[in-house]
Image 1 (tube, rainbow, N blue to C red):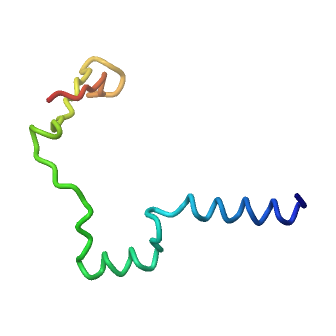
Image 2: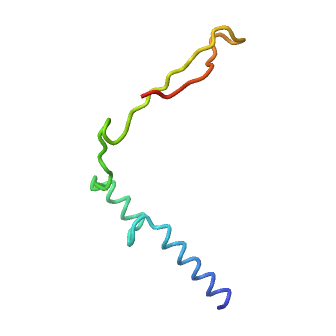
Image 3: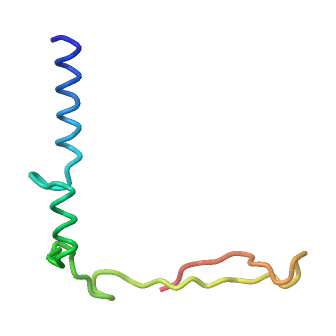
Length: 76
């Protein structure tokens, strides 16, 4: 196979694999989003599908810069 044919095949494969859905184009996706017809987004329920975490910060009041954050953790 020649170099030109290999490059063409590689380019075509890259373009096809980068598509979000088969037969979809960026222009079609943008039009659907503008029209409000983008119903492909899943609907999630808090507590069932995911847990909301809250960041808790522990402060160091005896450091060089007062107060300085010693560490933080994410708690449900």
